[in-house]
Image (tube, rainbow, N blue to C red):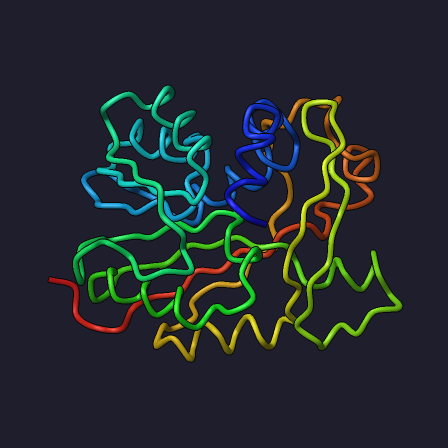
Length: 238
């Protein structure tokens, strides 16, 4: 996906993100839970979109900086956040314009799966983390492709597209699938220590009408959608 793609449907994406099961009641609460206490911490929101995660982190006491590749998304984030968060337009595939060891936490919410190569971006995210700092990332769960496209080669890193509904409009999104082993290898090859792989269920605050029937009935507690990763930069916290 290019910045132009997100510029084209930024308003619809923002509206969907605000109230949908997958964003508002599943992915975002899970990321916040994994980040934990953020009071007084410096956090980089990599691929911040329209800023809902950054806004919540600020409300919890964090000092947040954000960037996104889409100018339209950054405009929406500036409207949401005002002057409380420094925001810039930047492509995660390019070297980051931030100093070494300048953040306690980096959050990369639903952004890495747009990239074929994770090597450079993860190395840059490690660079800006302080020793002992953590990366908290969410990506499309690779196992979902086994269910959605059983005829495709699960073990091949490959491009695929999905039609998704954004605020009542159908839009095609394009992602890079990589198997779980490649997710883990990319993290460890970047010099990060893998701490958590998580597959949470929806938030307990999910409105009943949004809950998938098999979860609402108690038959299941979660579903394949996103995979959550927590990795740490080795070193002593100063």
